[in-house]
Image (cartoon, rainbow over the protein chains, first blue to last red):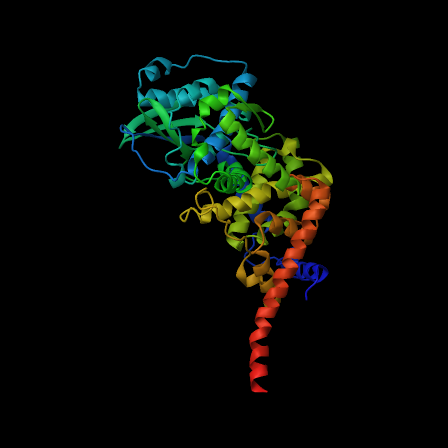
Length: 292
Length: 185
């Protein structure tokens, strides 16, 4: 019978790289690393990041598994809480975008421009106003970024707007709108990771229905991975166990914003009772798992 | 690079003192090519946030925190086609983090890596951080977002699980031979 002390010894002995001299021959030298970093940092200080905006004229109806709903509702409620906090923290700061009037008329390019402008100045209130009721929900089970990246980027609106840049949009080009904005080099998320923003979005009926990260994930994936591995997966497991028949699907994002009791990440409050109870159970379990 | 000379000097200090450790961290979890890229990514973050890097002995745990996310991003990017990780529907474990097969030198090591891969992702990471990176419970706690006491308890449980898996695998490996020997008598 192997003992823990033996396991520890074997684990230590199984260290694949015990010292710098044991690095494989193909590992980069410090000079090669520096050269690579220098080249990339030079690129990234000033570059404008393309944003791909897809205009989809018709809403596709797709069926998602029942259990997805509470998960999405829970995660979306967290986003909503963050959004609420963002609105609170920004103190309602607003400046009217040149796209505002046209966006109000439903022009997708203007909506894209308005989003970029709003994101740039951290005007989450306007962003929320232009979210489709089905924002990121229907595609979520089919898209591996979707809602999570939106969360990341909303946090970007909270933390990463120190260096605003210009936003411009062109299109349509084969059904896509292309926008650019300067990504903030100061995006800070939960003390680790940096993100640059490359967006892909669908605009339906003049509203943003879906957003995700297009192209190279780069640092945008850092926080996304945190969310996926450390939060969303446990949330999904909790949903399967706590609500196998999807009865918490009554959870409504706006209701969650307007009512409820669950403290979320210390920045916001979720108030819908159904959502609140659902999330409260998860938060307790999650906190217990972290502390166990 | 467009930062001030003092920032540049600070970055070089952090790089010179820590790049080997960060590179090894990545090599322990990724193939060599990805580990090279991941190490560069970590220091790119460090370059951009050089004024936020803790000083001296706290710099390396901070870099490990970034590296941990970069490594996971590498895994996820590589497996993006399969979309295993992010689908809530699947609720499956992320693919195990593994170094280059060639640098796992012996069967003994391969067994340990295989057993390690059967633990929960966070338990795997906790064991690696302790056994391979040599971090303290306090440092691991900061990285994984738990108290040092929780790290202590969780480490003991994870090690216990690893021990049981290794023990079970040994029995599985030896039992056919024993059975065969028994049949020949």
